[in-house]
Image (cartoon, rainbow, N blue to C red; front, side):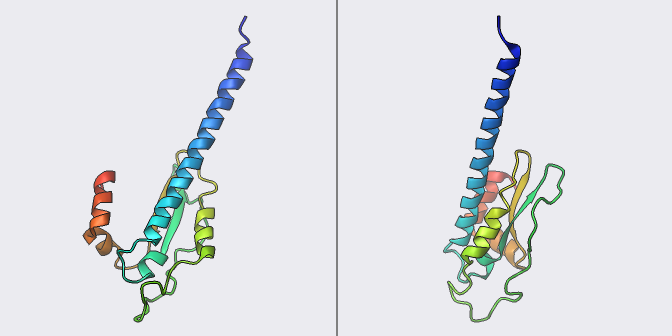
Length: 136
């Protein structure tokens, strides 16, 4: 005779394991996307790159992440060279920490408050290809 309770427990463990692995893969993927944005050679200064932040919301749109989305520095320096505003390891770690509580069904957004971001993303070929993939 089959022990339904034991089979049920095994199935629940398998589902939990698969869910945990999937969540881990999604977190890793989001980290790679973030790193790709930060390392993009397409932008002359680091102001656009260094001001990207990760936001995680639950399935109802409620924020699950704390932190700041303020620009740093608040104004783009006029003398910013290619690497002058590269993101610090501390900021990168703070952003990655926001992914720690990601669960299936949550929404991850990587965004920036740089005022000209939309123009950059609309007019740069790299981003045009990405928009075509996600249908925006």
